[in-house]
Length: 358
Image 1 (cartoon, rainbow, N blue to C red):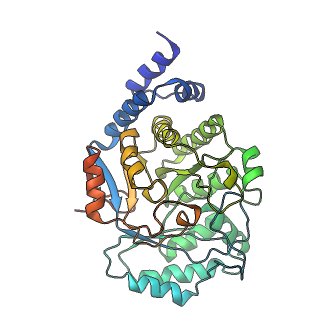
Image 2: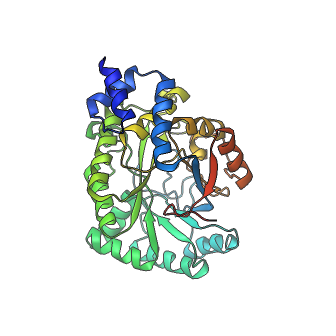
Image 3: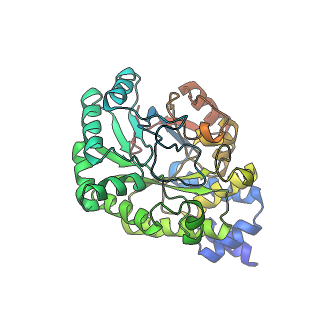
């Protein structure tokens, strides 16, 4: 039996693969075989189900202290294209969607020069007054680290205050690529991998679930991607607090890395499948349709994904500003069901914590 055949046999027996085995599989396995392996792994977790939710995004501001090279979203104060909502303007957005049926509000933005932890605590409290039934999934680890540090609190103290205010979960952004030599080139001002991992670790200990991401398709290598996934797998072994993993494709429009172009759909699918196979302890793999587009999202369901995010309701600009195909992203329930059915699966509505909604 060849080394590749031995790896495939291990995966068929639901055995964990090492980093070296993952590298060999990533480089040598044909795409059809990765599809088979990843879908089998997905079916062991969620059968024929593909999950979605009714959600919208709230993006307080794209004004940011940092200037990451891959970011098409960030603006300086006063720059053309910048926005900076007041508390009341954000609450008006929430009021306008009060009867939308949304079960989750996703809040992310720039690392703001003035808005502090107490500003965001008040935002969360008032959102819960308007939509008490909604789950608030808010702020990347980078945003959280900055606002909590600025308040002079420990990570645990800050997270406890946010949880008490009504924050139930944390999205996975800010992870980018954990490899230090890559971070130094694409996001030198952003916190370290260790900061990201520790903040998520502390959140899990407080029973705040999180997602995890990886930004791929820029200057990183396959080895860097595998290292990133293995570090997430180790954290999940320790805490079990990661709900879902989302591979985020680098989109090249309007940023400092535009000359790189974008990686292929084949690489997208290979990355999805390998994420499912390496992260054997993370139950859900999300193909974020706003980033991939609807046609690639349907293909992703044949490569291990079991979640496509939600209805969105034209409420996020992060990927449209970077060149994604949907400039006003929204998806009806009928569209979601059709995509899942065409791929041979059945769409199921979930809440933020993957409880099914009948």
